[in-house]
Image 1: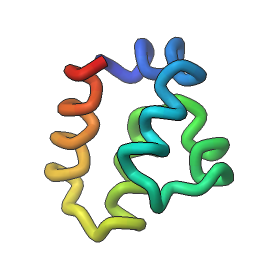
Image 2: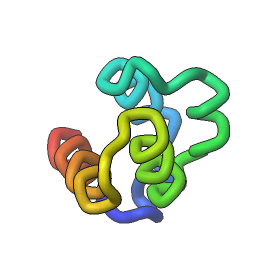
Image 3: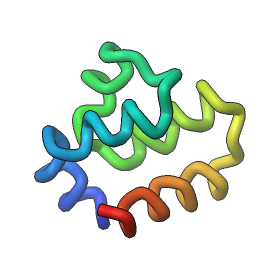
Amino acid sequence: MDGKELHGKWEQVRGFVQEFWGELTGSDLDYIAGERHRLVGKLEEKYGMSREEAESKVDEIADRL
């Protein structure tokens, strides 16, 4: 799922993302607003992931959806 698809499906994906990454708050999800680069950045910040790891995790979730 590329950034455009994530943005378009954000309301559907939002709950799944919060369930999968429980440390992301409602405010975090409002900030992310379906922007892939923001989600990657928050995963780096909250979970201490490298950029590559965070991108891989986002891709993994996208594949499940």
